[in-house]
Image (cartoon, rainbow, N blue to C red; front, side):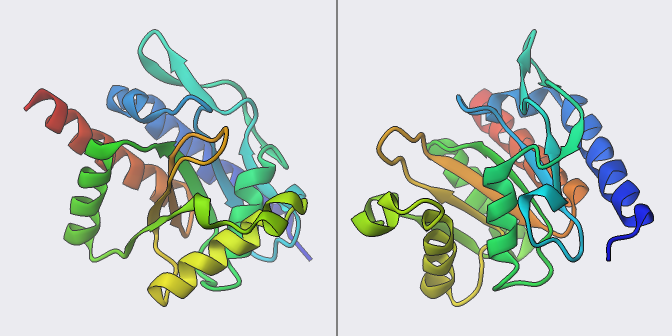
Length: 197
């Protein structure tokens, strides 16, 4: 049974994480076409309704990251399912953020992972079997299982190559929203330095 305290803690952590992202102009360069979302699950979450995320996602306004809405339960079905599936392989994962993927960002993330002793990964969406692609809700378990099988553990930072009608995206997984937001900010700063240098 989830306590009110746990629910407040998750929302509070998300608010802090969003404020962090909004205060770093560099993060705007990592926001993809589909925009960014940030999600954080309750300790015993078993459905997307028990995972809080940002309503309307995070977009770019006047060259700055800007949340379109407030944290709300069930606001991101996609990231919620990602977290719930990831937890089956790594019980410490409770939060996720998505951001843009391109060659320079891949290099920056590889460097970040090397410096922080994190497992870096990537997933080829074109390998997804047709029956999995057609079956509603089957894609996420397949993707997470593939990553685990490929690396023997779940990478905390990984990208998915472009698929049919899907842009390539990075995902960061962590223990809470502030942790994954911090990872994204550090990567955004590294990306900004690369582009300026």
